[in-house]
Image 1 (cartoon, rainbow, N blue to C red):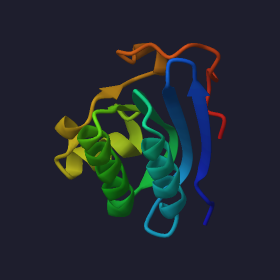
Image 2: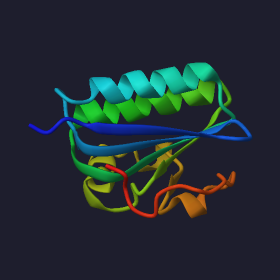
Image 3: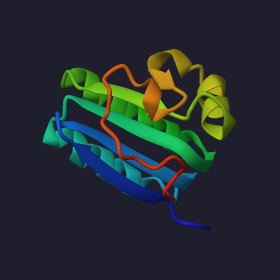
Image 4: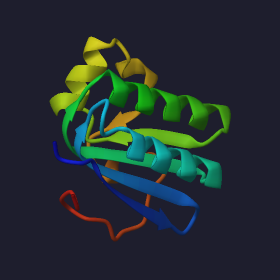
Length: 125
């Protein structure tokens, strides 16, 4: 199985983006959990998780995203999912009836708190 691919970008103004690609399944989710936990512990004003490159997701992947969203909320950190409006992530969130838990935007340009460029126009993954 392909490993999950991750890249973290930090921007002035204390904003971070975690780009995720590949499968988010029970045996591949741990690295993303670790990266999201580390970014949230840094205490950014906002954290966006770019899921446009995710090819498959199961309940472990959904649990990791839910835990990160909960931790962000408890720490008053802005949190959104990018590219989760369609594809496997959208289907999994809908099946779990968790779509309303998240702020979901189609692209990085749609984030309420602007993140300065540059960022990749296509997934880096």
